[in-house]
Image 1: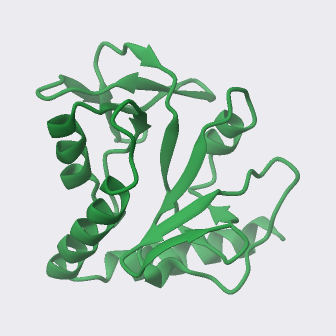
Image 2: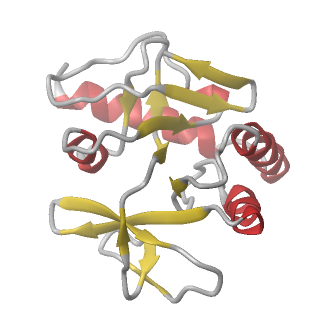
Length: 181
C-alpha cells in the first residue's frame, strides 16, 4: 500500500477517536480497564502507555495495577529503539521528541504483557500505528510478550495492509470487549 494511503488511513482513524466526547472517552477507558484488570496475573509486569491524541486512557488501569501490586512499565524511546521502563506513582517524567511523557530516569524492565496503542486494527490482528515502527521492532526482538492492542471500536477497520516487518497483535480490547486472534 502506498504511503499516501496509509497516511489517509491514519488521518481518518485519528480523527474518529478524537471526535469522541470526553464522557465517551472516560466510559471507554473504564470499560477497557475493567476488562483487562480481570485477566492480569498479580505477578505480571504490564507495559502500558501514557495516552494522548484520543488514545484510550489507561490511567485507571495503571492505578488498579498499582493497588494490586502489579508492576507497570511505559515506553521510552532511544533513537530508533523502544524499551520499557518501570513506572511508579509520582514518577518524574519528561516529554520525548514526540511530546510523549516517559520516565526521566528510566529503570528498564521486560514486560510480560504489552498494552499497545494503535491508530486502527482489523479482524486479523493487524494494527496501524503512527508510522515510526517502534512497536513492530520491539515485537520482532525476543523475548516475545503478549501483544494486546487497546482501541476504541471506531478504530476497527475492515482490513489493513501488512508488511513483512509488521507483527500482529495477539488480542484487542475495546469498549465492546476482548477479541483474541
